[in-house]
Image (cartoon, rainbow, N blue to C red; front, side, top):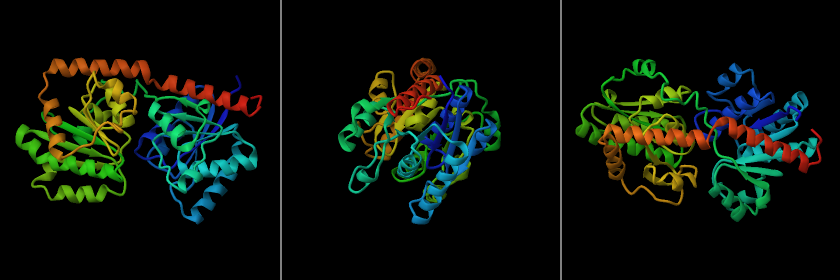
Length: 378
């Protein structure tokens, strides 16, 4: 099969599941001999792409303003003329709208990945374009597309997130990050990683709220909150109201050294891709996010969580911060052998179901299916 040029437009390249997915997909496509070109509003992962000699085109795809939409259209047009991609594979609503227009103008096959359950209220439903093939990251995302966007089921392929098992490995060094953040080697560490926007800010604030109770119970404990977004400053201000907060609450913003941060955690509070990355590193996990709350992830709950891409969507909601406190406490009081056995189970499952190599291979199969559907002989 011919090696392909793939334009990968996405909103941005900061902390987030879709952003990390695009970065890992681009890197793996490059390793397979294809030429990925990423287009976004920028972010901390741009440097990582450059280190892999992957082209990045900066466009304001995170903005709905008319001037920025025009700038993005011009950026798309220039990128198409320069790189002459075989396929546009878009990630994000604004990017999909512009991809549709560019696809029509230049007759380039266009497809998308649905990373979440998108809002379908009017008029957004009619301004959302999916392309001729769609990848859904979970079964519930696929059903959402069929039910609410009237997408033909035959056009949807479920391909789960791909995790780099070499990068997200239990041997990842965490001593440098501990030194940088002045963390204590002896402390129990609770790590929350998320984009800090919308309802995810509420979860981050709950993590801050339970910090004093955890400190009273365990004495030597540290809370690390990782992520960026419009809620970052309000979370920092919230933490400022807690006595002696700087001694044990660290709010560190956006980072790319996520494996190192995860590996120092005794408890990881996360959802989606980050939860899967934590599983790859054999960590104890609480699924808590903006779409639902599943609580402590166990072997028995694995399949249930998997159906919603480890988001807890439509499974449960968090009633109070006491619920979160009790779940963190329960994990920290588990016998070491139980923690080890559960961690081994998680890593084995991620290796079996979520390898980045398999994700990229399946994605390339969809690319060739799209080209066949469009009648391209590439």
